[in-house]
Length: 102
Length: 102
DNA sequence: CGTGTAAGGAATTCTGACACG
DNA sequence: CGTGTAAGGAATTCTGACACG
Image 1 (cartoon, chains in turn purple, brown, green, blue):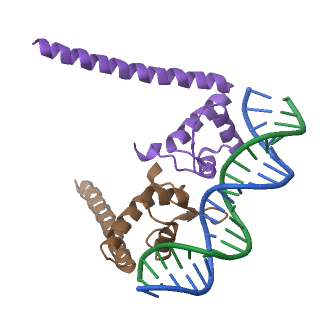
Image 2 (cartoon, rainbow over the protein chains, first blue to last red; image 1 turned 120 degrees about the vertical axis):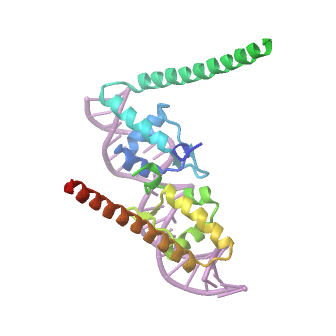
């Protein structure tokens, strides 16, 4: 895991980086669009990947998209990623089996 | 400037990432080994580059090196970087001048 | 010199709610 | 639905100091 995925940024830094209000950021989390981690005391910790995602979200909101739609899209993308990995694994298996027949 | 140089991490995250105590991190700043930025309210904001530097510093301290020596080394490296840039600029200038003679 | 710790205060963040629409 | 705001409290961070060595 690279720096980009480390959950280490406080919400204040995220707000500055994205230009979004604290309220908006918390709301997008509430709607399940982002999933920051929590410190022992309960403060949110974000990654730079979250920051990028938030900027995407902000654009989609500006375009009139609703949070549940945005979430649906993310779910689909996640599913695609999973499918991709599955396909690669299957290909790997087939490839290995094919080699054994030689 | 990439993500690595953004001054956005609170000291707590830096402490977790490096394994160093808050006290140590603040002390290394006091000795001029790192230069975090400050928020409006005065809280320190570090970059991932600072985190990497702190891990180097920790190793050098472990090796018995003193903070002022570490600082001296960093100063030298900085000077080297500057020299490098200067050389490149001079070469660029000469190159441009040379082309004009053709 | 480098680091731990207790102390008091200030900045940051948290949640739940009311408001508007 | 998405967002602002005031409210009270908790977590985080800050500084200066004393301690040890």
